[in-house]
Each structure stands twice: as C-alpha cells, then as structure tokens.
Image (cartoon, rainbow over all chains, first blue to last red; front, side, top):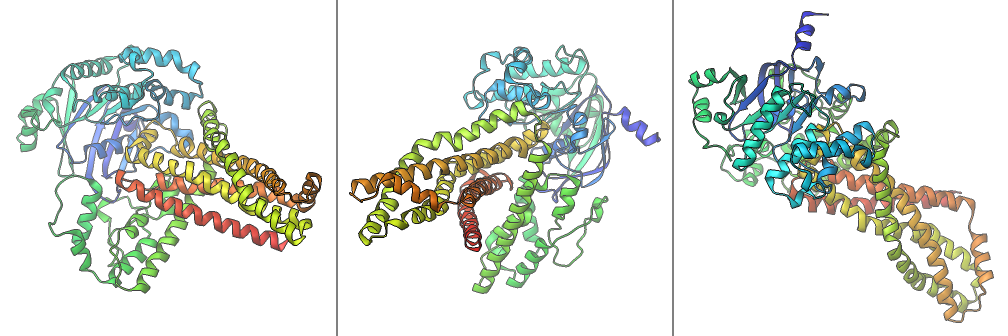
Amino acid sequence: MSAAHETSTRCAIEMRGVSGGSMRDLNTIVVEDVNWSVAPGDFWVIGGLQGTGKSDFLMLTAGLMTPVAGTYCFLGEEMPIFEDHRLKDRLRLGFVFENGQLFNHLTVSENVSLPLRYHHNLSKAEAAPEVQKLLELTELAPWADSTPGAMTRNWQRRVGLARALMLRPDVLLLDNPLAGLDLRHRAWWLNLLKELSQGYEWTNGRPTTLVVTTNDLRQWRGDRRQFAVLKDKRFMVLGDWQKVEAAGDELVRELRASAAHND
Amino acid sequence: MKDVTKREDHDKSGGGPPQSKTPLRLRERKHSERFWTAVALRRFFSYRSAQTDGSKRGRKFPFDLFPAENYVAAMQKGNASTFDSPQVRFVMRMPMPQFFSNFLGRKLFRLLLTIQGLGAFALITLGVMIKKFGSARRVIRPLVFQEISRSGLQLLLMFLFLAVVLGLLVIGQTVSWASRLGATQYLGSVMVIVVVRELGPLIAALLVLARIGTANVVELGTARALGEVEALEALGIDPVHYLVVPRVIGMAVGIFSLTVYLIIAALSSGYLWAFMQNVPLRPGDYFSQLASALTGLDFVLLAIKTLLFGFIISIVTCYHGLAQPLRLEEISYATVRAVAQSVIACVLIDALFIIIYLAT
C-alpha cells in the first residue's frame, strides 16, 4: 500500500488541490485549490458569506459533483461515487440540505423511511419500527403523517436531518443548519450535533464526523471544533477557536463578531 | 464577449452582483450573427478532454467561449450529465436572429439538440430499467402500480364516455352513409382502418398526454427546481430509477389498456348508433365483417404501437421535467415544449406504422 493511500484511509475526507464548480454549471468555478483533511470524529465549521459557494463546496464534498481538478478521497474511496458496487461507501456520508429539500408529495414518515426502504428493499411495515424510533428521537412523531407543506420551516429542516440520519452515516454534512431557526430549535440542533459528534444512541455510540457551513462563526465556538473560511474562491483552514479569534482577516473578524449576516 | 460570459456565470452561480449594468439584450446585440453561429457550432460539437489541472481550463479555439465537456465523456465518467445539457439552454437563450435563413438554422440546431437529448435520455432510461430490474422492488413496484392506476384505471370512465361519442361521430355516420350507398359489406374494413389502426391508439395517446403527460412535466420540473432531485442523489437513490422508470412503465401499460377499451367501446357504440338509424345490419354480420378485416398483424402492431406511444410520451415529458436545471418560472415553457414534441413524435410514429401496414 502506498504512503498516499495510507494517509487517505486514515482521513474521513481528504482533498488535494481540489477545484469545484457551481451546482448549476460545472464550468463556473466557485472554489479553487482546496487542501483539506478531516479526521474521523472531527467537527468542522466552514464560514463564509452568502453566495460565496459554501453550498456548492458542500455538495462537492457530498459527491454530488465531480471536482474540476484535484483528487478527493472519502474514507479512502475516490469521489464522486456513482457505480453501484461502490454505493455502500457512498452511503456512509449523509447530507442535510439548507432548506431540507424534502419530497413534497410524501409524508414525513415516508420521507424519512425512503433511503432505508430503497437501499434495503423493505416494505413500509418492515421499515416502520426503525422510522418510528428515529422520529421519536427527533421529536417528529406527531408529524409522521403530515406532508412537508403543512409544517413550519423549523420542523421541515428537522425532517431533512432525520432523513439523512436514517442510514446512520459516519460523516454528516450540514448546509447552514441554524439559519432561520427560532431559539428553541437552534438550541435543540446545537445540542443534538454535539451529542452526534460525541457519540449518539442512534449511531450506536459511534462519534459522527460533522461538517457544517455557517455565516456566523460565533455560535459554533466550542472545544474540539475546527474552523475554515471560504473567501474569494479560496478555502482557508484556520484551526480551533483560538486561531479564529487571533486571525486578522477582515472576513473572519466579521463572521465571528456578530450575527449580522445570519438570516 | 467577456460581458456575455460574465452574465452567464452570474446567472448560473446565483450569487453576487452582476458584473455589468448594461442590459443583457443590448450586450448580446453587439455580436454579429456569424459570431453566434460560430459559438453555437462550437457548443454543439464541443469537446474537451478530461483535464486534471484546473488552471488549464483553456480555449482551444478562439470562439470557444464556454468550454463544455463532451456529453459522451461525461456519461462515461458517470457524472450524471443525464440531466445537464448546457448546450440546449444556450441555444434556447440566444438572441433572435435578423435573417429568416438564420432563424431556420436555429430551428434546425434546436431540433438536433432535442433529438440528441431525448435519444440519450431514452437510452439511459432503458439502461436503468434493465440494469436495476428487480432492485428495490418494494419501493419501485408500488410506484409502478400507482402510475398504472393513474395513467390507466383512473381515466377509464372518461375513455368509455369518449368512446361512445367517437362511435357516434365516426362510426355512426360512416355506417349510415355506407348503408345509403349500399356499401355495408365494406363496413368491417373501414372500422378496422379508422378505429383500430388509427383513431383508437392516437386518441388514447393524446388524451393520456393531456391528462398525465403534462402533470409529469409539472411534477418533475417542480421537483427539479426545488432541489428534490439533488436530494435523491444525495441519498444514493437513482432519480431515473425512482422517478422516470415507474412513469414509463405506467404510461406504456396505461395507453395500451385504454386503447383496447376505447376500441371495443367505440365499435360497440358505433353499431348502437347505426342500429338507432335503422341501418339493415345484423350484429352477427357486423362482427363477422370486423373479424374478417382484422389480421394477426393488427393485434401485434396495435400492441407495439401503443406501448411505443406510452414510452415516447413519458420519455419526452420526463425529459423536459428533469433534463435541465429548471427554474420555477420555466416550467410552463417546458410543459408547452413537451406537449408539442410529444404530439409530433406520436404522429411520426403513427406515420411509420402506416408505412409498415402499407408495405405488408
């Protein structure tokens, strides 16, 4: 086994010189020359203003797009994965969209159960116990038979999280999870993500690797969290919160100083 | 040249202020017809080898404004260019040409691009149907039944009503005229040609297109615009398998079954109208004429034709709903295009079958 391969198997996410395009058009570059390693169990926070390509970068990380340049390995597998025989590795990564991106014609329980049913070929009744358990964990049980259109944005976002957690991913990417949430929901999310990162009962006590994007770094400060910022197509790795506080960059100062850019 | 590129980039990335304040239309007018033709040509035949170094994203030709990846190369790499054909978007959004010949050329380009896109989409769908046959059947099978019910069973009453009216309009009149001319012995052949071969399948296809095909475009276009397709991909679910395959099977089976009912009901009601007009034709004679006019080939071709109608309509409508990253306001245009193209495709297939009938 080569040295490069050994390094990449240790890392959950390993990017070398990666450039990524926009989701709408691969030829519009939104981020260039990313060198980034995420160890299993890490909690990364990526800051940046709206429209700087955080979502596109996260979608690239989720394997929804091919990098325009560079190599990107996820748990030792080269991304993106589209082949059926490598799908199992691909499913170790979960993605929570900013607006939930729920299937509007399905009910909440159908939304949440779809990945489990599709990948394990289960009928609704067979998937029901697992789904019920997850809905109770995420406090969504009363909404089980509602369609997303009948729920407020706060709860829709939570359905998106439940759907991504259904397959118990090792790595979870969350696109701006706290934007637009009320205080109670925000506290719930922060608490849940903390538990996920430390080992949650749903994931059998296994710490989940988390990557979140945000436009307000301050609310994510805490121990064992790593920070990076996306600015002018550049991906700047900062390190822990002390480094963020010490950083002289104007954008970092703005992002950590206030919640002005939030929502 | 640069302005247009920037506008295009801004348009697609969605963020940041526009690069120039000049209205788009004015800036586009700066370029000559020849320029746009050259760009369109390059877009259509564009190729770019897989480049690993982003800095080399170069222009091989001076008019290669928007280097696009070759469709085939993208498919080989498997990066889901199924749903992305920027060339089509580009040609659709070019400014109006000044000369009629150029306008015709534009139409030709669009036709070729549409055929290319539709062909690729149909092949991909067929490939997924074969490759994923039986996988996730407990999810896909209920969807297939749901689609068959939607494009078949739920339309049955409407079809029976229309069949009765059709019987009156076509068959009742023909029978009464034929009897006045004393040509009642040809009734069977006339019925078979008019109803079984032509009107039955075509009317069934067009009605299902109007009822279900349009709904397909709107549903899938909305799902695409709201990012549900990306959500499916993020969950490792093949959007073609989950969204398109059930619709294709449902519509093919639906149109086939409805055509059978339509034909039976129309032929029966036709006799009923003739009977009410006191045409001297006994039921036995009428049905023996029909039976003698029908051949085995009629049944085979009817089945193939209706299944093909269903396949084509569902492919065209799903393609327009899914193939391009639509914005919500574009869904109505996509629906209009899908309906027009489906009708044209159905009529062309019908013509093809007439040739087969005439040749045999």
